[in-house]
Amino acid sequence: MSAPMREGTRLDDFKVSDAALNQPVIATERFILRPLRPSDAGMIAHYTADKRVAEGTRAIPHPLPPGASEGFVARALSADRTEDVWAIDGSANKLAELLGVVSLTRMEGDQSELGFWIGAGFWNTGFATEAVEALVKANPHKARTLFAEVFQDNPGSARVLTNCGFVYLGDAESWSVARDARVPTWTYLRKM
Image (cartoon, rainbow, N blue to C red; front, side, top):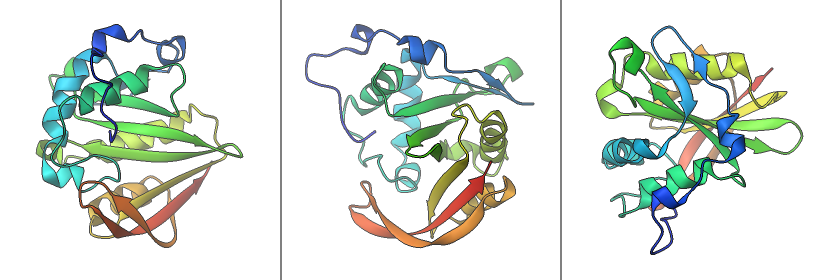
């Protein structure tokens, strides 16, 4: 979510790509993982405006600039996107329509990188583990290996990964836009 929309562009100007329409809907016990839709932009902006959420990611800025969530949704719906993003939607089970997001970014050699965040009001509910577990099981990219990294000051996200069969690969560091700094990370992988 680091690049805002171009000036004069409205989210309604973007057509949902055929690829996004073909992105699978994945059901879990408490929610579904579905492609983003334009109406998700407001809740994405609401959740990611929380400094704790933004600082748990590499790319979400804090404070969140105007148009950033709309730009994120537009990129997630574009035909030339590099990342498939699913909304964690609990509305069928009387939960929030958007609890967070989970994503896969294609890498070379039949590999993908997994990312996720959950709205702070839903932390410690098991939603992240359930979403990651469902995405891993579905393996929509048909990846042979999944990678993920978490900041070392976020052991909860590390537990999500290990609970879903990811194994620790090593230490590294990554840039955090919200922190405006390089942050130590733990890198994980899961062979499929």
